[in-house]
Image 1 (tube, helix red, strand yellow):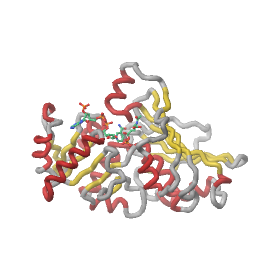
Image 2 (tube, rainbow, N blue to C red):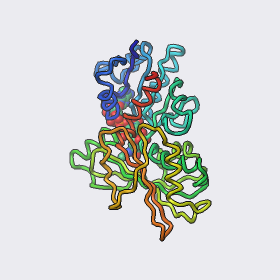
Image 3 (cartoon, protein in one colour):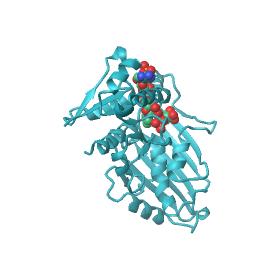
Image 4 (cartoon, helix red, strand yellow):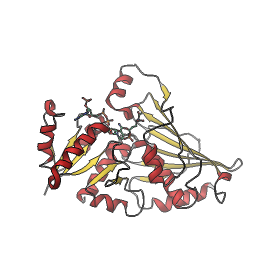
Length: 304
Ligand SMILES: NC(=O)C1=CN([C@@H]2O[C@H](COP(=O)(O)OP(=O)(O)OC[C@H]3O[C@@H](n4cnc5c(N)ncnc54)[C@H](OP(=O)(O)O)[C@@H]3O)[C@@H](O)[C@H]2O)C=CC1
Ligand SMILES: CC(=O)N[C@@H](CCC(=O)OP(=O)(O)O)C(=O)O
């Protein structure tokens, strides 16, 4: 039996990448609207009533509109996988990060509505949640999260600006310190204190590094880097797409090294003399950070 899927926003960056990943799958039938009707609510409603799963690759407001169309369909609503930020901490939605904790992959598999993780959030949570669960970081710990993303993270408009040479080589942004990713980072890392989040974007299409500096003596029990590594090894044992890596001896990390993959790598750098550590997650923002994660969640939803 094939699963009928509609990708709402299939002309955008995330939608196109998902379509490419699903090309050639014989267990999936992709149902699409003609380009001139792709924003037509009536045409969307008709298609939504006849499919199994809708994947939303839309700006937040448009994603909420499609969800309202599904709500109006009642029992005929398809299951939903939303790649936008709109429902990541909303009641009734399961968070689409299978490696979050024991039972999360099964919950995604059963869910009617799944909110796909965000790119910065998935890296931040992947680094923090195992350490909070292990008691190595306390929920009220003051934390800073530094991040750099490729420009595809900003979607079509940012891609066009960079590719037309109309954007700076590197810039910090989100400097009002009100970034939209913080609610999900706090909720799923189980933090009670709001971290300082410092995102930046560079003149490369895709790739992402998220890093969290820690003064080890400020943490409970004054842990070592080995304690962090042990917690990550336990948490990600058997995970196909997230792995702990040895810290490179040259002390350098290339943000683009995982491009084209759906994987995430975690690193712990430490200097014992100063009792300083740096946690780093590396991924392709369009891979494990968006479309690769969406396909991973879709496969759980359809039981592959
Ligand atoms: N890029 C990334 O790295 C990541 C993106 N995401 C999330 O995925 C979502 C999509 O982002 P991204 O693919 O980057 O954005 P893009 O801007 O590249 O794509 C969005 C697409 O949605 C289309 N669209 C807008 N309104 C409607 C509508 N009412 N009906 C149908 N299509 C519509 C746009 O068309 P048009 O351009 O003509 O308006 C565009 O093709 C966002 O919510 C983003 O937060 C999540 C993780 C990472
Ligand atoms: C470089 C850039 O602009 N990045 C986007 C995040 C990418 C993304 O859309 O991820 P989410 O799905 O988690 O929103 C931003 O900061 O809003």
